[in-house]
Image 1 (tube, helix red, strand yellow):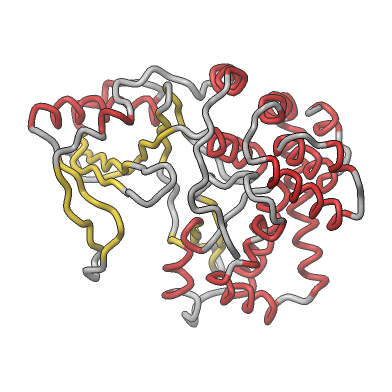
Image 2: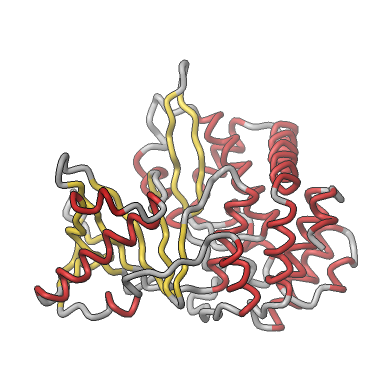
Length: 347
């Protein structure tokens, strides 16, 4: 499938800014994205096998690095401990990586605790409205809590833990201990979550798989990590991970282990859970969709195409009344999650 590789960034509107402020997503940060662009050089970051990761480790002038390190530890404190700086003296930003190829051209910051050498990551990105809507919809409608902050045009994101999907498929999918039925069930649920809230481009490297030991086996959770393509593309298939070529091995596994009635059961289970979350967060979801519906998030031709394809899929003409991608997301939620009180409250 053809994906818009050069999706333009969309600015934060006053309505979206007000939403971020109202729900504690906005904060004054001591470091901005532009500050990290002042690096003076870089070298390729290789993985344990010596393969290029497509990330560059960047370096700075000594004085700039000292100032950045202090500011980045404060950012980490804001993200993790609501700004409690009492722990910051034991923290240091010991490495900063940069990826030129992502839409948001992210920086990845490694924070090390000098008392025990434990480390954690967070990301500094250019704030794009599409990504912010994607992060918020994930937070409200999925089982995954999203932790991020916005300051001006800078976005700070918490690291999402898991095995990258492409690595998992290549290295883990054929392992004898893998519970393929449980993984297949989770992929069906992930596929459904993406389609209900219209999150696109879930190729294998845009999600991770978290493995949790259970008392008898393992549980799996597929978690999106890239939200740039939230309700941007015009083709319905772009919002279904099952149609991407690099997910073919997982789709084949699902076909081997799940009967059609199993798939329908898991889809229904996931929609019921999403509807329950929507009811619990009905006021916040209403405010988010209100901002999103007034925001231009895709070219008009993509809006027109997606309206037509979803009309055909749902056997309806309800999408004809939609004027924006936000309208389409709201209508798709309504049709797939049911006319619950939460969705009536959402507009």
